Length: 394
Image (cartoon, rainbow, N blue to C red):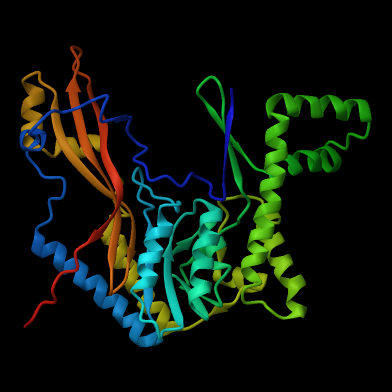
């Protein structure tokens, strides 16, 4: 029986390591002392190096706070190939922790955002939390805030985009898991495009022929999922409009808010299309240009990019091959184990550090034909607070 999943992002929001096969630790257990057998620790950086990197990021966050005169919270989900992260419900509690650390007299806040998307309803709730607490919310986008991240940004009084930055469409995607183990992803806009094709290109006016083509469509896509896609599309527009109305409050802004929401949902033909700064301005979004702020948020992004290793795809086989003891075990005909650890998301500020980390072991083996294979064994994943290091003193 097919099952559907609705998300505002082009991909789901779970934090995953999709490149390798994954097994629960109950299925494959390396046994005790596996880390010592594997040799290299999951986090090879020295403590001093980690502390120095954290302090550098904090310094860049503080530079933004000093320039803007308000608290900053950084929220980034990983866009690292094979180690992605997505906005998900577990982020809500993390945001609450960050909000609670902001001094009570502060009524304005900045959110530096980097994400490819995820659960649009979670994005709405996160912005609602901020609007309940603060009188003014700004979203700073140094590089990418796509799909559900764009939904989040719609609730901001102002959006500061670096010239390199992009937003994205908000049309919700439905992933249908089929009985044969495959899946199909589509949106309501795909259904609408089918009927536009019949009218504009094929120009099929005969009702009997149209009925047969519609029957073929419904044989491919369950009618129930067609209905769900329509509801999801309506919800996307309504949610976006509701967020826009948080700051577009006058009576003459009702129609513009609806037009912006509708355009982001229905008028962009590809879900992975990119909305650059000038295009966002043309849509009517509250874009603010400030070269000094743009430079500061880019500096912060570069530090985040390095921390999450966004430009280095996670490759299980490569990680395994870097471990000498594991290679010796494999050469001796034994299965070797190498620990791995990747960061899927961070929520950081000068007041609190938190990260979503996935860790486990990579099992490597060689068959009789000499073929080398690796399997990632996911052991643990979730949010955890990171200890704030003491400042260095000259």
